[in-house]
Image (cartoon, rainbow, N blue to C red):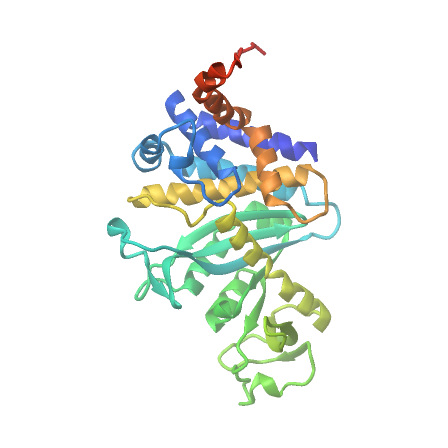
Length: 371
């Protein structure tokens, strides 16, 4: 697992080299530092080493290549994912597609067409592609849903699946997991055309070719033909316990021949992305952007997701099968990957309190040593 830490350190080093000046390298480290605090409020005004205006210029104005940053992160993520490849049967790469809302209040004049109400929530609506293999989790890519008369979330999800690199689709069996919102005939058909299998939730009011509803089926895992869908699929269901204690029957569709119990097991795996959304928002401030330009928002999202990935790798480095304590893992990531960002706030605070300490007879001296 030490290779994972080396990979994370190499990625941070690569990202710094992509910045065109030392000043921008410092700004990048400062931003990653506040993301890696893991407290969910990575606001520029909380940074002890750079002013909020300096970080705002770094996100919104300075000319550094966001595309090169994304490419570097993906190359490192690919290397980590491919380390799960082994001799024998190809392992399964879970490709989870879902839509989430980064809820926002207030006015965003520069991109008012993007911050809108959808499904009763106001904010930026993004379709995310999330990869899972073994213990490795990677937020791979996202697309913003722009509203009526633009590509639908289903079409955006298809676009993301199509753009998966061949190096992954050739090394793994791909299983696309999604919720009911992505169970359209178009989504299922076009993913199968890519030679990937699909397992999605479906609504209970879907009809079979013979006119019956799927609620009239009594055998889990049987092959059926849905109305309007040309290829045969397999249906099963499970019971989900709601917050009020009642059980809710959930139907799932799969294009691959699987036992009913296996379909249910894979169907529950889709919920991994919900845990990721909560962590990304409440630990790494994915929805906390306050920039007034599209470029600034885009860069904020990219760096927030990069911070999540780095902390996840540090958690894997700990070689534990326990669920991560994200606060603890984020602090370790900050100390291991950006040690100066962990130390500088303390040094700034010491400097601020130096006169007070001297007034009370305490003399504090900080000596810099060459390593």
